[in-house]
Length: 49
Image 1: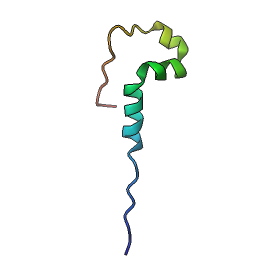
Image 2: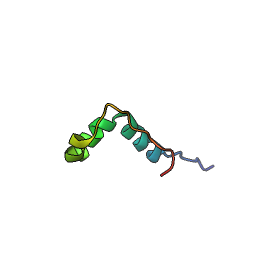
Image 3: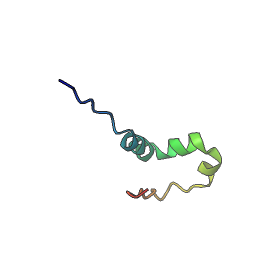
């Protein structure tokens, strides 16, 4: 009998991290861009890639 292993949906998990921690994500990966972004207006995350 073969067991089917379910792998985590890494794409969805990664998108959740970016969505929930967007400011921190941007600060870590692009501090220069972080300084230029106005976070008073929340970002709009699109479902399409």
